[in-house]
Each structure stands twice: as C-alpha cells, then as structure tokens.
Image 1: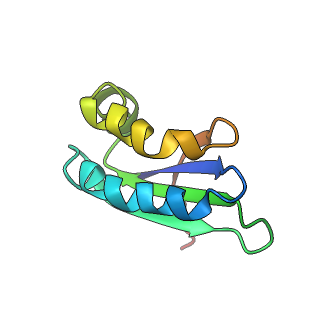
Image 2: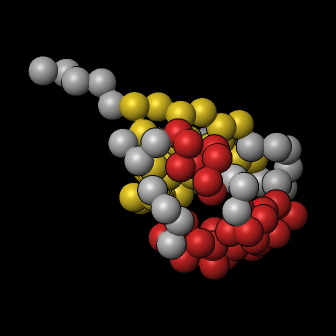
Length: 98
C-alpha cells in the first residue's frame, strides 16, 4: 500500500466549509477502486493548513483511475472552492524499521 499525502492550504475563514466538503466527499473515496483509507489532519500552528492522507493499493489507483473518474471531478467541486492555492501532493510508502 502507498499513501497519497496532499498538503492543502485553505482560504482563511473557509476551514469549516472545507472540512464539510471533505466529509461529503468521503463516500467517493470509499467507493474508489484501490482506496483503503482516508484521513484529514489540521495543523495546530497553521490552522488553515491540512494534510489529506489517502491509502491506495498503488499509485495508479490514485493517479490514473481516481484522477480520471467522475468521482475526482466531484471531489474538486466540493473542496476546490476553498483552496487558497493548489494542493501539493506526493506519494510515500512505509519503510521497515526492523
């Protein structure tokens, strides 16, 4: 499994609307092929900064299948109006510490 980590800067005073949009979009991720988990974290020091962390089976499940689906378009409709700037997205994998 890999993780998509999207750092999202939200326009000031749009935080509650953004969080509501992510809640409304959760079923889109839950139904997406290869999606295993979704979580949202909010910065304490920078309350308009969030990290969306999505577990995918593969990068292609995110970048090819989900990004080219109507679900992605709907996701952006729900949350995009609240962005202060485009999200910064990267993919990571676990490293064994044993």
